[in-house]
Length: 276
Image (tube, rainbow, N blue to C red; front, top):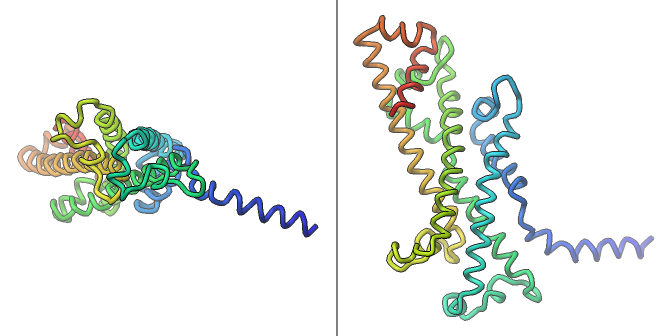
């Protein structure tokens, strides 16, 4: 019995380094992304943002979306690590260490896998920082003022659900924008002429900000997501002011077009934002 226990302990220790540096699959990492996003947003706005009408499949829908981003993260990590591995100047730029010495542990056979895992994790962290719909809604609330913000996003009688509705709307938009951003960044990463159009700098040098430039892809995605979010905020701000002017100048026409229920103004904002 003692011999069996010792074998199990030795086996566990032998497998520990592998488990510690195993790279999650895109679906596994996407599930973590969605759990983190749900914690940021709150359950109700999260469900409103991702569930199909009449269903409760919000988490699955979220994972399906973010798995696309995590596949891009993994693909970019493989591409960047392959480039580093083949770079004859790698040691000169990494304190005299070879690729295997810099990333590897033990006999160094895990160097490439550790490199990929590091870059994929760094990208995810950079992207998650920018995925903050509540922050965007706080900005809009300050920009518009509480009364107009409440009307622009509130759908119940007293408009107290305005912030949650705003958060779910921004989250839906950001979840699409981050996929588009990842696609654009992959295109840049795989562009053979990237350095020629960026002052001789590689993709990693342009976007990377940490010591090993491992967050380059995530920063690229985060920058493009930030630009899309800024555009969305401007569109919603403009739409809210347009709807206020429409309702003031032509109340009957406004009611005819958007109704007179408590969600009429919010319907106007969504419609106007889509046209801008």
